[in-house]
Image 1 (cartoon, one colour):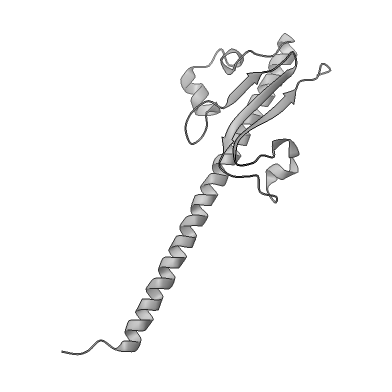
Image 2 (cartoon, rainbow, N blue to C red):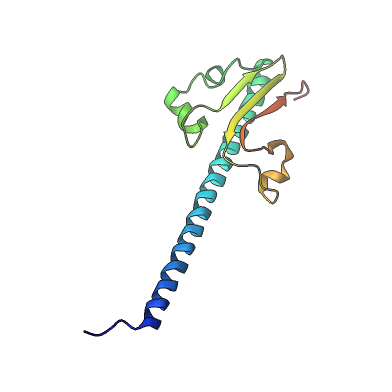
Length: 141
């Protein structure tokens, strides 16, 4: 019976180890990328709520009490699909905080990267975890 060549064994061993390390690095990148994508979707949904709150205020001269008031013509299923957290499905948070003040809150997977699109819009910068954005609707709108 022939003996397996030692050089071939070491070549294959190194190849397998390098391949495994590459796979682990790639999976980490994919995981981080999906966190980033979910955070971008959260911001996109918060922007939608912000625009709709402003429109609601312009029309009624008052802030909505809740997301259900803001979207009274929508079903709870629609709300979760369009305004829910992309990971959990729970509604993003809206809190009426005063006559013209409200908060929009979400739980983020990671801090806003410095080179991201959101960085251009400082009003959407956030840390990792739960974060609320305070918004004020101006009377002149």
